[in-house]
Length: 264
Image 1 (tube, helix red, strand yellow):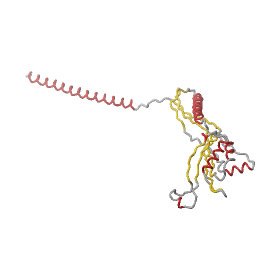
Image 2 (spheres, rainbow, N blue to C red):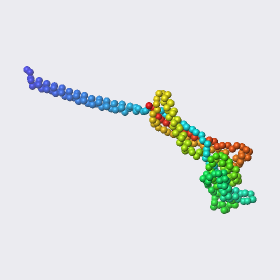
Image 3 (spheres, helix red, strand yellow):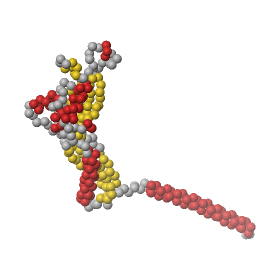
Image 4 (cartoon, one colour):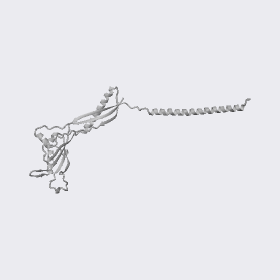
C-alpha cells in the first residue's frame, strides 16, 4: 500500500539535495569567474606596463668651426738684478729699474702695459744671516710687459742692459678680442651642425625639426708660444748677423658643437 507521508518526505529531501547541489555549483562558478576576471585584469595590466615607450626619431650631428689669428698680445717676463760693475762697484736696483722703464717708454709702450711680478733679494741667504756673510745681497725685480707685435720686442732688446738682464722670455701669446672670436666660432659651429643635419636628413627623405639638445666639446686653446727671445744675447747675435727676426706663430682657435635634432 502506498505511503504518502514517506513518499512526500523522500521527494522533499530529493528537492532539497538538488537545491543544495545547485547552490554549491553556483558558488563554485562564481568564485571561478572572479578568479578568471582577476587573472585577466592582472595580465592586461602587465601587458600595458611592458609596452615599450615611443621615442621621437632624432639625428645627432657635430659642427666644427676653426680660425687662425695673429696674436696681438705678447706677454714677456723680464728679470733684472743688481750686479758689480768693474771699477764702479755695485749698480743698485733703483738705477737699473729707472733705466729699464726709461727704455720701455722710449719705444712707445704705455705704463699700463708694464707690471711688477716680484721684487726681492736673490742670494738664497736668509735675511737674519746676511749680516754675518761677506757676500753682498743682490736685489732683483721681475716685470711682465705686454707687447702688440714682435718689432717692439726687438726695439726693447736693443736698449736693455745685458749685465742686469737675467731672463727675457715669452710667457704667453693671445689676442685682445679672444672672447669675441670664440663666441663667433660657437655660432658658426652651430650653423655648420644644422646645415649638416639638413642634408643628411634630406638624403633619407626626412626633415629636421627643433633642436633637442646642444652640447659643446671643450678644447684647450693651445697657444704655441715661441720662446725665440729666451735670452737677449741670442737675439742680439741674430740682429748683428743680419738675420730676419721670426714672427710669432698664428693662434689656432676651434669650436665643436654636438646637436640633436628631431626628425619630422
